[in-house]
Image (cartoon, rainbow, N blue to C red; front, side, top):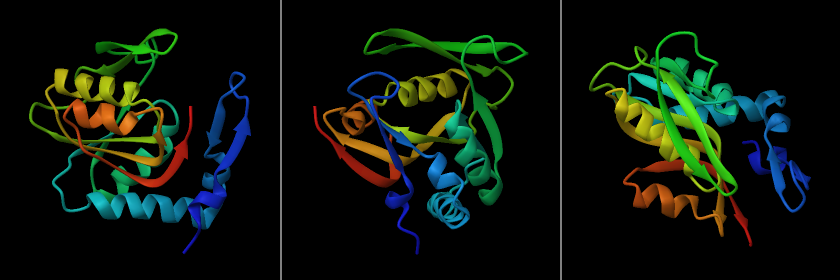
Length: 178
């Protein structure tokens, strides 16, 4: 077994002073670490009837596409505005410093499909919850959310997702202070 936590690089003061950025590029370029993280996520969700896996731009694509392949599901992109070429649904959500938007193709999820959301990291939960609402707007049912890393503690992502009525799992939990 690989110690996945040791493969996560901490980058101080990125992208702004005071942020301790958790860099997964060091995990994904390690072949054993990347394989183990994808295999572990897929193991949780195989045989659950999930028909689509949604990856959140951009690092969610890395893990989400592999998990979709391993569990036999289709893969759907959630992107920033203006990046998808066909008709989209759009969702605005709040950030600490303002708002942002994400989009999904209108024809990417059929009504009633069971969907798994995958991203690299759970911090405040804002993007994940907005993604879930976007999937529901498209007619899908959010089965669960999966993250490689959960930043637990003061960011309160776990609480936000639970309060919004969603379930999730994470491979690694890293405590953070205020």
